[in-house]
Amino acid sequence: MWCHSCREEYEEEDAGTCKECYEEASETEEELKREIEDLKAKVAFLRLCSPVDPSPSSPTTTDVVLHAASPAGECTSVPPIPAHRAVLMSRSPVFKAMLENEMEESRSGMIKITDVTYNVLRSFVHYLYTAEVLLDEQMACDLLILAEKYQVKHLKAFCEKFMISKINNDNAIVSFAFAHRHNAQHLLEAALSLLLDNMSTLTAREEYKELVEKDPRLVVEIFEAYLRRQVNIALKD
Amino acid sequence: MWCHSCREEYEEEDAGTCKECYEEASETEEELKREIEDLKAKVAFLRLCSPVDPSPSSPTTTDVVLHAASPAGECTSVPPIPAHRAVLMSRSPVFKAMLENEMEESRSGMIKITDVTYNVLRSFVHYLYTAEVLLDEQMACDLLILAEKYQVKHLKAFCEKFMISKINNDNAIVSFAFAHRHNAQHLLEAALSLLLDNMSTLTAREEYKELVEKDPRLVVEIFEAYLRRQVNIALKD
Image 1 (cartoon, rainbow over the protein chains, first blue to last red):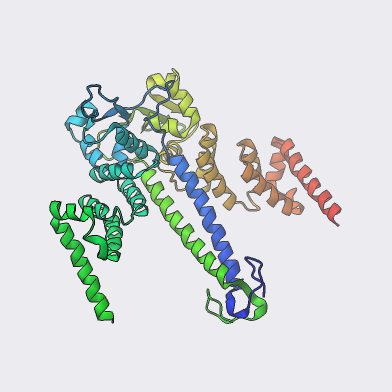
Image 2: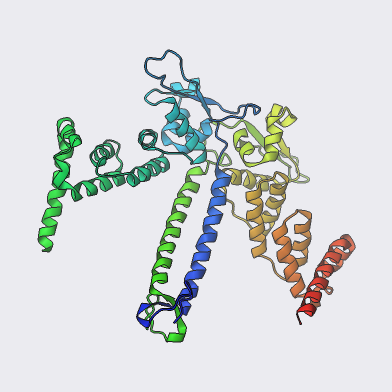
């Protein structure tokens, strides 16, 4: 028999689908690809010009500025980041409440976010306009914290996914603690699962000892999860 | 043999794929579906609150208004439609040029679009914020014209797709002329193809006679395309 897909010959016991299902699957794939093209075009359409890189010729239409912290020990202040109230309010319920009500930020048109660096805040604002950001591990942490604070769920999920893709034995404890602190459930589960798979080396790790010092309740959580797993394995045997 | 997809028995001559290709195809389908979910979430994130239905409690952040024509014969003027310069400029190079330069519209913050009704302009603005609109045949025509005028390619393609899905023998001539006038290439091709499939009844149609009167060059185009097709068929025989 000849496979309609790879065109190779195969034996009866290696048969996959009948011809009808093969054709149906090909059609489905085509349809899904068309849907992806449509959605990509929609995303491109809905993206806004980011005010983070304003073209010098354009007049500014922004009506609010965001201020990050100055680098520690430096006197020079960082430049403000211009933005549109309408965009911030669309993307974040926290900005919405802040700018909708007669709060200081709304009156002055200035939002101070002093616990982040200029670069992080710049990437944050850029993401609110474009849903685009280039992540490394540090940027993913910093943006996840900001996204959690301002309830920008889409960005938080994006950072979490990136961090999950980077989890390994060396950063699992730190990631677990981070996920706990910032309410990142998927990252928490991924980190915990990796920790449980490597319990034999857990207690020898430096980060483990630090965590016992700093937040022993989290260590208890790891052991409780380990115990549950052991009991489950015992029950199955 | 048993099909892995529909679980039915089939004969050797009805074999579709080998097992390996079947499994690969299933994985691809899962991946494509995940990509679609991601893109849908991105679209939802990038959508803006439409200023067309402002919530009465929110303070307005709009900085420009659009005016449609008043209905013919009525003295009462229609309400202005508020919008954001930044959004209009992001979506349409025509609005961008208009608002970037020191044109009347930029100074006054008022854009008059007198050749459309209030409802069409409202849907147009709503689409610029949300990429969403409920079309019927009239709305698709009206919005395609506006999208062409303001170079909002995504909306134009959306209307064109809708109109192509509604093409039939009764509206093919009108659609062909409309597509010609508004530079809608895909609609033009779809309409022409349907006309060529039904040439025997073409000249008896009322719309045909009207087109000969109003724009005989378009009729010539139909006949030239018909001639090309006939020659091609003759060459193949």
